[in-house]
Length: 145
Image 1: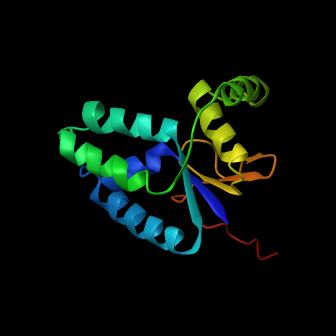
Image 2 (image 1 turned 120 degrees about the vertical axis):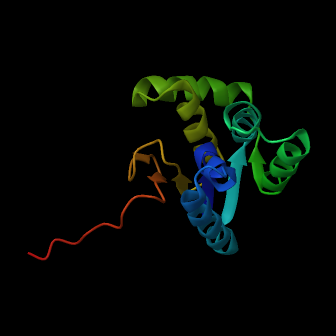
């Protein structure tokens, strides 16, 4: 299975301020990568760099930021192009998504992913053949009746 990982999950993996989330995502990503193809986009790398150098306190050093980006770039990276931007624009309107979320969804669709892992897009939401999964969501409960 091909799985797209949204920026927010990479941030949790690297954010030292939330050790429980970081440890959970570290283990979860390791298990996921052992069994599935991991995909990201150029947008994920750009957003991650911004968060690591501007939003995290303390900010990552230049070297630590480069190391993090290089590690994630080892996975398949979907580049943005004009058609993706235009299709994401359409998707944002039809699905009522933010612009940046629409770009993430469009990159995942174009790269043939079956799953998009994100904390932000609505657990179990579907876009064509793409299912959004929040790894922090509690397991579904079965109604005993």
